[in-house]
Length: 248
Image 1 (tube, rainbow, N blue to C red):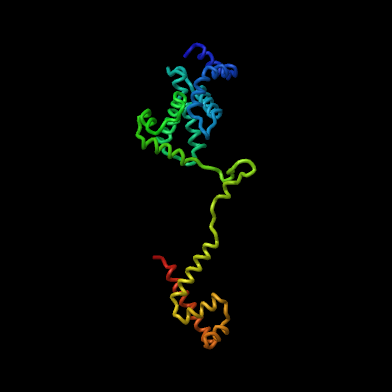
Image 2 (tube, rainbow, N blue to C red; image 1 turned 30 degrees about the horizontal axis):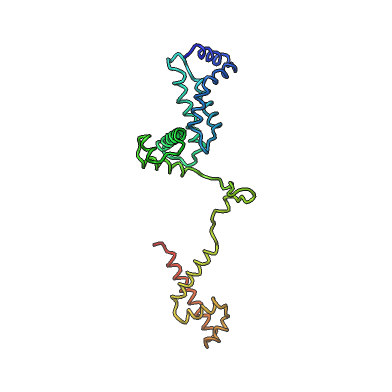
C-alpha cells in the first residue's frame, strides 16, 4: 500500500475524515466502474451497480487491517463482489437458481459484453462454450435458468401509450358455466341409465318442465303413478351419483 493510501486510511479510521474518504474513493473509480460494468443488467441499472460496488468498498474500508499484511485491493475485491452478488440473490432473484448456474450466468454476461465490444456482434452458444471451457448444454441451461427467474408484476402494463392494459386482465379465471356443463353431462349420463318409462317421465319433468298432471295425461297413467315414478327415479339417480363420487 502506498504512503498516500496509508495516510488516507489513518485519517478515515481515526477521524472519519470526509475529505480523506472522497480522495480514497477517487483512487478506486476504475475498479468501481469495472464492477458496475460486469454486474449491471436489465434488472440492475449501471448506476445502481456502481453504488453497490461503492458500498462494498466502504465496508472493506471499515474492516481493513493493514497489520495483517494483505493489500487493500486484495481484501476489498471479494467484499465488493459479495455485495453485488448478495443484492442479486436477495432482491432480484425471486425464483432462486443453484449457485453454479448463477456464477456461470455472470461469466456468460461478462464474456458476451467483451466479445460484443471487440467484434460488434453477440456470440453464439458454441463460441461461449469454447471460450468459457464449458459444455454447450451448460451454456443453454444457464441461459434458460436466467430466463425462468424473470417475473412480472400483475400491476404492470402491456401495450404502449393510452392502450396500456394491466397484465392482471390477461389472467384466466374459473368460468362457472364450465361447472354447469359438467353437471349437465352427469345428469344426462344418469338419466340414460334409468328404465325407459322412468327416463321418459324425468325428461318431461326436468327438460320440458311439465307438471305431474300433464305428464299423467300424456302417458295415459294416473298422477299418483307419475309421482311414484319420480320418487323412484330420484332414488336411483342419487344412488348412481353417490357411486361416482366414491374414491377409487
